[in-house]
Image 1 (tube, rainbow, N blue to C red):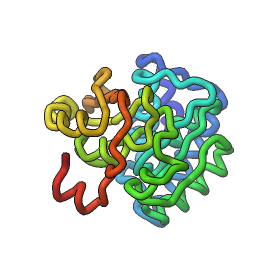
Image 2: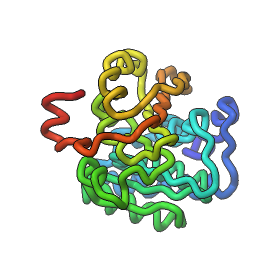
Image 3: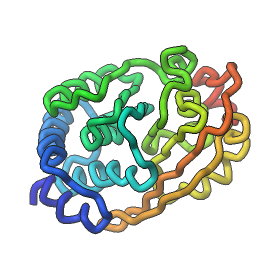
Length: 237
């Protein structure tokens, strides 16, 4: 079966709707993801079933943790091959999505894919998260931040929460270790004005355990955060 056939055969079981418009966009995404992956290392998952389930369905399940509204702004921190940000942009054309990454080669691929998909509500930004998080045009300007399995939660919070408005949320897409990571992020949450507002756990077809941690931004972050990446890595909060 094709990527789209696999996706449609499984999405309904999770209450995820694949509209004709989204289907057309994701079909282009899948094809170009494979083409670009022959040139640069975008993803280790290149089979049709893997792309459908472990990339597309996994990203679309963000809808279980957040209700996106028209005019919302979303920033995907460490977007890599565009997951979950570009999938969110394709599924929610009324939402404005920023795809942030520090790797120029990957962003070149993502920009090409975005353009050929016809996704006009997403823009690519080549910058380190800890630098962008201190800039007025990005700091506390977003309703949602997302990141997928980039680092452990206590580290991710320092990279992502600076982008989120008070009252907004960081959606962390995680694997089976999600609950354990929450226990280790208590200091980071308190320091950075975050509060766990829910955990959506599910099992993908094939058995992979997944979770989305919803971190609500309840207060402003001290201006000294985010620190430089070397400090974050050496001494996580």
